Image (tube, rainbow over all chains, first blue to last red; front, side, top):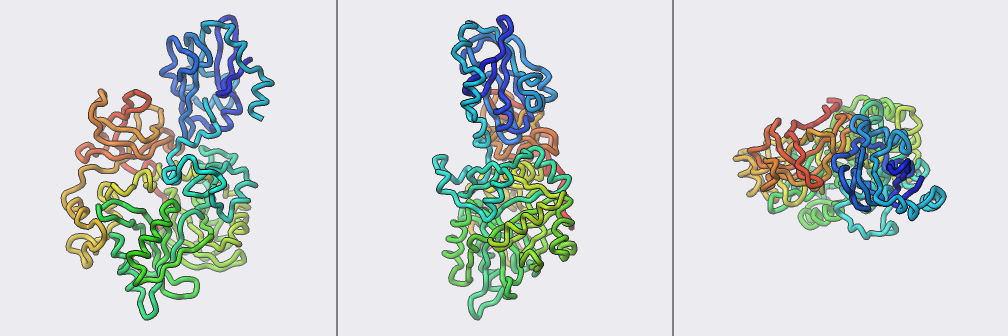
Length: 119
Length: 406
């Protein structure tokens, strides 16, 4: 599993990366009340806004962590955005990407480096 | 996402508008409950020049729901508490008439022991601030008016009163005195355990109470839409009172985040968002708060700043009007956002001034200003957010029925 400075995690299986936000991020945001997946489609460049997560008080952008094509979104979040709070690294995943260059992942943080960032 | 811990930076609270984003934490004032907020795990943010908790570990959503079902304790000590008293040889009526020269309310006719919602207007008919005015003896028994004004506006309000009526009225802004709000259906029982007399109070009644936790001045009011109280207490007694109230299982500490979502669901305006110097009380749909005696044909018609602008609006209706807005989808609206009559988003006909998620309404809720001809409940409009046209319906306020003790 890899991490970004923007508090996203990336898990690669084959050539498909699953992306979500970290537990640290969910604790800071508080209970999510809406996840906007409507723009998560097609080709994305690193840094493009893929998803917007909304807590009671604020909206926060979640970015494409690397170049690639979005191939799936977590439709369960439409009915239950709280899944992200309950299980941020599991059932609360946000979207899946087919990475343009899987090698790009190497530049991201490992768990120890991310933990050092947030401690 | 960037800085999730700063996630509340995009929220629209009273203080956010009045402070530069560059303001350093070290410039912030603290309330008498600052240490207690820290101990309780409050996430402190700048608000109206003070460091105040936006939420506690329970989180905004659960704090909001807790207030609606039980009771919540809020620190609103940033608000200004002001006594207006007669000058030597003057009377309470002189004080009332002096204040009436600044507000469109009937202060002379307010009964002793009662409080009333009011607002300072400007010469353009806009709103300088909104406030509560109580007619009550002070702690020493002298006839007086007691005002509670917004924290972000209190210095300007004080200067305004000193300049306009300072020659006729003694004005005392209390320094450092705490103000606690206890809101929710369980508020009465919790407060009555320490001040039994509060059970006899009705909505907007005020009084002095004494007990083992000290002498306090209490109003049965608040800004959550629930029954509740605001308690003015000496700074050095505030923490003991807060701890005594929090010792009740029914009472949880509540931050500014839930205060905002509670008042929005209750259809109550936040100065700086929904009310400002370019918005008149008629446009803001606050005519219910302007009594007959000060309107055309009343005993003391007009006689406050902006009357020449407000009078024709009262007679003919305003060009724009504050309304409730219910998004048809699930996405909350985060102002500032323009509103349009058509999905093509050409020519704005209004704007969203408060918006967010209503935990008790179980969906997004908002309010804003629209052209008067589009202000009927059920009217479909479109909000422009994230480059999309989001359908919203004009809705009757409040979103959640108010439960005051009448």
